[in-house]
Length: 273
Image (cartoon, rainbow, N blue to C red; front, side, top):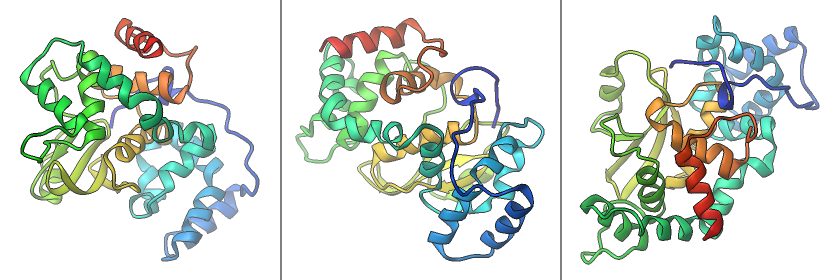
């Protein structure tokens, strides 16, 4: 994965005061114990206890690539991404996307998408978003379709010939082996078809992190948070999408983050609707 200094996920910030944090020597002992444990509750608690110890490692450009080696339980214990993000910004901020998508954003983004230039793909996304497919078999589930139809199209993301933010394949191992060079985090899904996805994974540094949630927007929520947990810059092709989520939905680093005119325009339209 590539990193870049600046606002958003790469911005170094003051670590909140968290009770129960351990000194360096004790952290090393706990890490060794945790990596041998099979008790999920103990792992989650010990990862919380070593949160402050983890931050300098994450933000050191010479050592950040070792984070998943030092803390391999990030690769097999669900909930750790949400925990670290909540420790950084608080549980209220962490819950904003999933808490507000259905009550605040979903209907608005569908309505905004209806005003865009009509295309065959957009029509399909809107039908999926409204659960209106004649054959009863939508291409995408309603939540992710509404997310794509407005944000991706309005922010000019799918008009470009870039790698998709959501990828699927026959074999997870084959997919990972075929990846070349540095890539920013993205979603890999497991399922029989787009509307029957059974598991979501985040791919980072050719490693799989299983998502805690089994719904599409929960996976998007966790993918966004990974950037802050590991201090990784956004994929350039998806920068507008992530910036919109960061500043408009989560309300993180609003004053310190440079927004494109597209992001500002979309926020203004949603606030008026």
